[in-house]
Length: 548
Image (cartoon, rainbow, N blue to C red; front, side, top):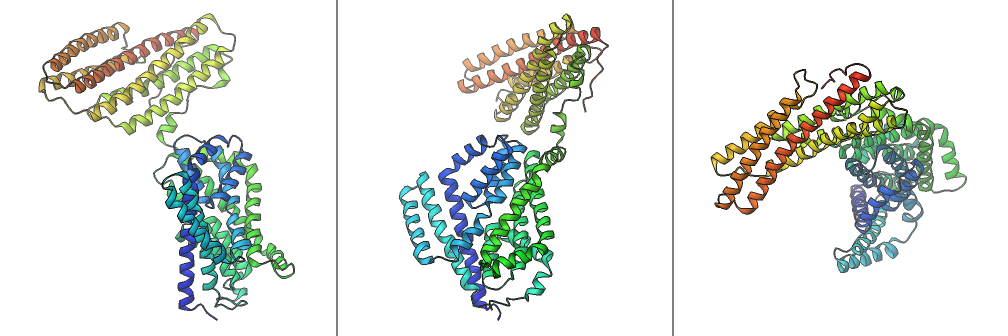
């Protein structure tokens, strides 16, 4: 027999109901416990094993590995989770998503749908309307989705009921000779439905209805398991490098697990048939067991490979900002040689200063780009942390007096440059949001002051052979005098009504930030210049660091 048009329409409606039920159930559970999900993922992934267990539990509860994966990518994007934590949860989510197969097999195809699903829909929607936007409404929505979920399975079963139980659409021998092609079909099906759970339910009901043989159903289940990675790939378009690494880890796990399962399927097929024919297991239960078994096997396979995988991924999807944030001179093997270690610190601080001055010049420019400044700020902050950790390791050793006396200045320089970065980001945001003053002369004076501060950055380069502490101090004194004169002009403009009080306050804050920016950069240069002299005395002159 063949699938009739009415049967095809019924099956399509069943898929739609199933997807609707999954959406309602997943969204309802996230509404009811979304904040708890964020807290749990953030706090309970301290070890890889806990991450696997947590990923299994959450995905089995939400019935959506895609929702968990997208949430993971969001947390990694925000810096709330690192790559190692996320990978453990990914492993577990693939095991947890197999719960859908067990629900379909042990409950969905055996219960009286009208006796369970319809009351769930009714009670759930009443609770959803009564509770409004409260978390309890999420419980009602999830309950209604649970009912629609099983209603969709029932409709799917009806759609396939017109097929011959033994033959299906394609002869079993032909189906089982094209495992790789069937797996590719499972990938495509999951991509189209954007839900591996929906694809799995479709495969299980098709197998129960005779459309697919047991081996063919197993191959499509493998493909559906691989196809769920498409959601993660779509979610990381335009995301951070770490988020892309999470998606790559997800693809790697599912792809390797799928290949392993396909290679072993011919050998495992007799076992699956034995469970179905001799032990009288339902075909759906056999496929659910197979789905769980090869995902657990995938975790066991990937567990010893996790560290190499993390190292591999850390070297991929790198951005220029991440490369710049990697210390180039802080080699811990030289900590035992203080003269080399202090020279390394000076060189790394030179890189920090280069980034800080670049940020200041961008903030003082005509069109400051906050996105570029945020990337520079992230790189600078990471280098500052690395400098502090290296200095701490050096401090624990037996140091010559000149090196020991210089270490506080190392931290002082890093903090001056960190302040430059912070002020640059704040100043750029203020200048972007603040409209130019209406008075042309006052506007010109403000722009001239910003240009003067930007020019002061040229004298804040301690690696320049022409650097002169006296010239830098004189430049700063002139800037300070101009600051006070311009401040008086702003106050007079406020008292004359040229500037509104709120605008006056914001303009004074901006003027102060420009002045502090130049001061902090000059102080950092002064102390770094002195540190370079210490390094020269301890060993040899520090060379000019690359600004690339």
